[in-house]
Image 1 (cartoon, protein in one colour):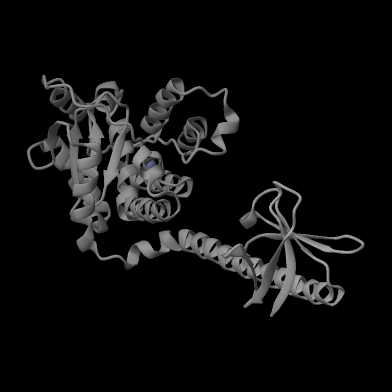
Image 2 (cartoon, rainbow, N blue to C red):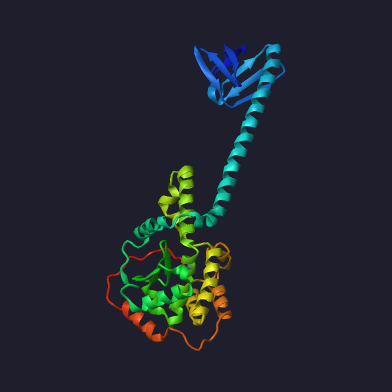
Length: 351
Ligand SMILES: [Zn+2]
């Protein structure tokens, strides 16, 4: 479809004839030997003309259609273009939100997908985790060269055979923490042992970590980070991954932490150990963290230390005897006092 029109370039008042073409939902203007595809058309009807403007022809330029019959036809075509554009936006909107909803659904089901993943990927994930977080950390002892760690490990496997294959290590760190890595590895930091007031405190923290191992929580965390990393690469070219922001999400979810705390209470009961040690541990964490910013707790991936002190206090019981004694704690402290080079401080907290 083709119409005769006048082209005003906005720089001088002289009008010049041009041809306006309509083809496949697009308006095209042929002017001065140039063919311009008109994008983002706006139009205005005056008493005698229709004036078309478009980003493609410049800010002040416009095309005027004088013929009344042509005006009538062009108005119908403009309405058709507007309808097509709005239907394109609707389709894009639906597709965009379908993708978002699909990703949210996938995110929610990632925890459930963990048990579909073969155990064979865990050694690889462990290597990646060590490379990222523990490249410079010195291992002070592990359960194959330390009798007390071996005793703790065997006690856990005895009460829960699904923990068979776990390995416990003490790593040099100034942080009061312990972490679980893929492939059933539990790392306890030397500072936690140095500051521990009882063997219940150390075994309690390990009991919490054992629950993370049992339910493969760190695999879920790695899946989520990998998933977000892919999304990040698509949306921002990997900016979040490079800035390290995604690593924050490597921490376990609040639900996983609650499950690990519940698991610790059960394991400690089976080991005939009081939860008082865990209470003491979270009191120390509480002292280190400000409790004034209670609103931030809502966004924290971990339950508040205050809530955990209350929880472990509630389940506190006294047992007549257990396999563990304060001598075991002294032996572990002995390992940590061995002079070793300062390890690089890690930033991720997982407990
Ligand atoms: Zn935890």
